[in-house]
Length: 468
Image 1 (cartoon, rainbow, N blue to C red):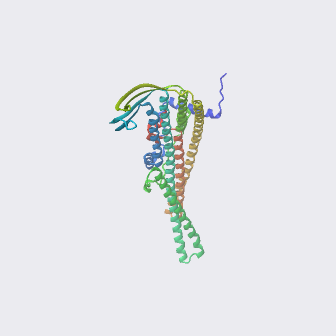
Image 2: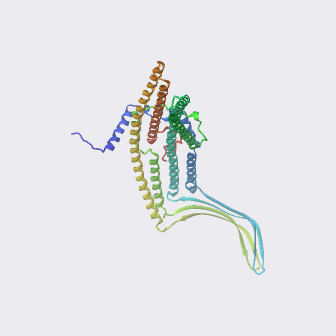
Image 3: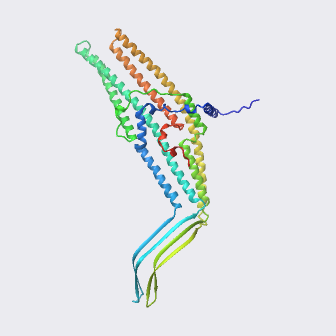
């Protein structure tokens, strides 16, 4: 009798995804499935250049990069410096006068006096090494946060750039609608002048023209503001209007690719997610902090060497003699805290609690990421289907315009009918631009979420991959 294993729908779904990935790899198709040529910047060179500029010039990214630099300096100060020798030298030059009280003998001495010390940590039960590892983890956490910030920033830039194209198409449509309205108003005024219509009939065309003008003014402001906002976010003064295309490119999509990308995320339990990596690094930091706390009450050993030249005075009631004396010393030093008011105990408790917290956070982040990725893949599919419907409507509008123009040549329709059909096509183009923008945004967000965003290749490799 075959053995049946019952799984929850959630894990059954994930098991299917893993099987899909395994099947693809077995067939040697892994290299054929990817995101190359499917991202918005692959169709829009202007967007690609903005992504590159943003990494270097965006105020947000520059500020985040400074945090990484500060973390690197902190690693040197708190991790490397304690492992190196401490050297100090205090020189001085002057005159010292010694006098016996009551008007007795006196003596003066000119010369150089100084004190020099070299101190080196020898053995602290691994504390120094673990402190350095903690600082490395802190630096990596900052780098991961920087990478996560850029990933989200790139996703935002894509959405804004695509929305900018849609805004430009909407502005074009509003301007065309205003042109038609102004033509209708001019015709109505001509008829009014010739007395073929009553004065009350001019109100409708005037009102329509005014409403169309308002729509154009609003669309213009929306477009200009969106362009300025995007420019400032990437660190530019402005984005030239001519660099924004008036047509949204047709996307490429493969359901097999989305299944494979999702299965790849499931395969490693979403551990490649930057937030998950941050949680893992915090777990490591908590482990190291606990190791340090365990040895806080053990003796610590140092080696010290010193040299000094001091004024030595020998005095009697009749004589005072001053001599510069040089002292050299070499010794081992032991520092041993026997009781610290239970501070060590609480330090260990804190480290263990921190570890448990970040272990829980890791579980929450990975589960949430896998759930979001599954939902995002469905949204990609829905967006692709919606795009198909928009394209079908555009084909109908395009076909109707061709038909109307043919009828105009035969004298069956007027130029106004052609203008109306053109306006209908423009409206359909706006709808299809919005649908394509929505799909490209949804797809790129999904690709970014599963950790396959090509934009991350611009970052240093250890920001993305390293956990050591």
